[in-house]
Length: 210
Length: 79
Image (cartoon, rainbow over all chains, first blue to last red; front, side, top):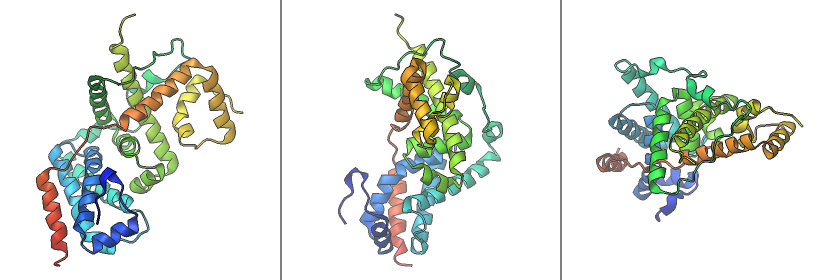
């Protein structure tokens, strides 16, 4: 097998055949292409780096154990992400007994984030955002987004992470999470609205006085 | 063509971006955005947010976990 520089993996049937044949280069390519994103998704459910790594590790072990039985009803990626989400949920349920952070989460219009961003007629349109050209600003924004994601209700967080951070399609997200397209859209919209609000607050706070 | 207030428009941006609106609603969103500076800016910020979300810091599996998984994959063949 050649290398898969740039993250371009071959079609699923090629991947599955290679994995079943024990092609190590193919397995390594999958590991290196998807594990980073899988860690981020795992973090949507669990609280520590260590837990996230274990969730990803257990997911890959399940993939290794299950590849022979894999039926191509879904894509390889969707299949793996479903295992990931289920593994992470179980882990989260176990952690929640000692760490009850899920108790204050709801998916309704939760906190002030939402009200703050509703543009009630634009008496004063907010200022244009600077493009994050400088590394410092980009790093600042990334940090802010990470914090923001952690504050979202869990269902919103997983949807926006899969869609906007990992670049899954809406069809993939619906399949991975077993939710309807309409539900996916509502959760995604609330999450994006909240994150936009936090970014807007941030840009407002660092605005140069004119 | 459907007419939107600014509040209503803000609520359908994701649906609009997902191409999940019917024709009259889609045309209504376009028409509103074309003539409302506030919503146009909000829409730009919404898209900038999506762009920023898609640029996360890189993550990597720790080397020991990776090599454990490579061994597990190798072992599998012997079962």
